[in-house]
Amino acid sequence: MAQLFYDSVRNLGLRRYTPEQVAVWAPEPPAPNAVHARALDGRTTLVAIDVSGEVVAYGDLERDGRIDHLYCRPDVAGAGVASKLLDELVARARSAGMSRLHVEASAIARGLFERNGFDFVHRRDFQLRSVIIHNYLMERLLI
Image 1: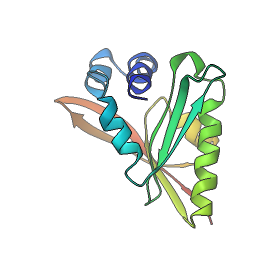
Image 2: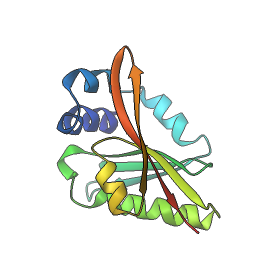
Image 3: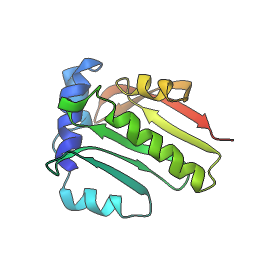
Image 4: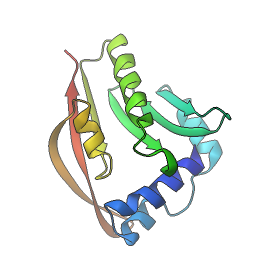
């Protein structure tokens, strides 16, 4: 998952962000043990694997209804894998009795979230390692 995150940001990120923005977003792959610990911190983490057992996408849902990560390998982007993971995250949120989901979606992911019932709230411009970057606060009501 650590390498997938890095590869996704470094490759797909260039579709909507500058090389400088992509470099500060993912300066290097995260430590695998940190990614593993994060996946086990109480959030729901779903992983999609291909027929050979390779991780092709993953997503997570925090207890407060925040979708923090939803990433796929660049070679499967646009194939519907992230959409299926998102559908399952929504189903899990409903099962847990959540009434609202929210996400700070990248410019790459914004369309995916919009197609899956999330509404745009506002654009967030912020500084990351002295570089200005942006994402979009989005939400979906489940009631």
